[in-house]
Image 1 (cartoon, rainbow, N blue to C red):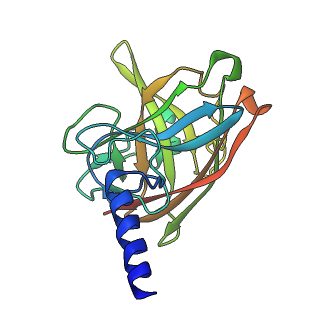
Image 2 (image 1 turned 120 degrees about the horizontal axis):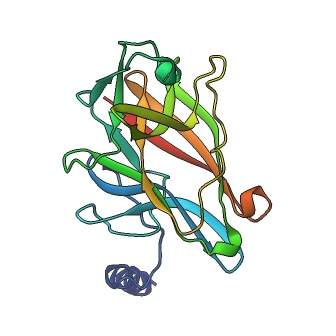
Length: 220
């Protein structure tokens, strides 16, 4: 009996080594590199939401599980809220926030979204911020993009947990088009741990859904 058990353990270990025992990809903490946090995939009538990673992040995969994965934003990645009404939903003018930026920086998270595996007939993808909880309490999360109009930088808030009047953005306006890959600014109002829950639904909300998928961001 002992020999049989030892043989079974040896075979299982060997199969795992050569990759014959399939398991969801997972990682511990990612603090730099190119990744698509909101990676939407459609296959055989099912929609999934997970993380897509690119080299040099390891593992490089289209199906990294958010479970057990921590996305870290350093306390040194700070910026200041500009003045002007367009920026008010990010916080008070002059206040400090922490951000994984839209522009590529090899030493920071280059975080985006990807729907290249969603066929046109299943788009756009309705993306919802179901909940945003911080510890300590009181932290706010916003995903926004910027564009330049003349000499002015203009933000567009894609998702925002700010509950101030006119700021809450629980649903991505217009959805994420099928076959799209983009990047934005992932902003946090304070140091702490953020538990963010998203839900993706094909057909602009009328198709299959990923269900609620929870991500962990560590700021600081």
